[in-house]
Image (cartoon, rainbow over the protein chains, first blue to last red):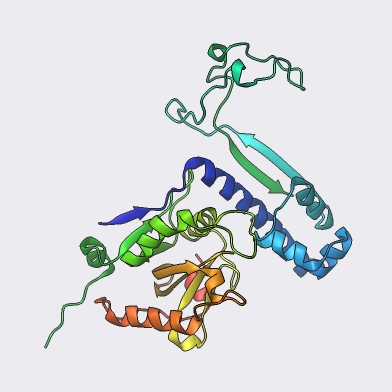
Length: 139
Length: 167
């Protein structure tokens, strides 16, 4: 059996599939509202003060979709947005995706949030960081 | 005279077709399949990683677009008619294209949820003002490849988008 796995790397895959899932959620919500109250892309665009083509391109992945625009679209579509960051199930010991940063590479000594910052790379353990699964839900 | 015809499995075993996969996420299972001609595999492996965004200036590069679309297809996620997957005119030829903003993959449906990809290309090559190739030629290339492949009849399945794509 000859198979070929098209693998673009975990980082690119994670980014691409997350963005794709966000668009899919928005498209599904837009379709539901079109059926329920005949809300068109033109109505959405008018509510946000942009041209209809902007909304179309953003929903189809042909234009950048900012977090602000996601929230604005959720508002127009009558949805709440919930973003959660889940730890994946299972052993992560062989899947740690990044090299722990060192202070010499510019790690801030006092982050904005006031959380404790490791002073050396040795203190930046696997328990401090982890692989992240993103999930966006529109309710 | 009897002529030996191959199944998909025997074609894959002989290298005539390649089982195309993408890494699935935890908990996902394949609900649709993609088999590709060797040219399609070569395009995925050698051309797609080098492609840059076309005139639509899409949000993601073509390699991410293709991963997304293949992932949507294989994992059984929603596929949108026309935007993601579309039949070429005339419909009786049963030639389909799997689409992203910057890429086109031409092929046919062997069975519901089983797409045979003949070749891939850059979308801008088929659209004004950068058009250098035609959909008519793409359709003819798929039909020619389909006619030549030694695959059990019926080689293709016709039907509506919903018949062929919905899982």
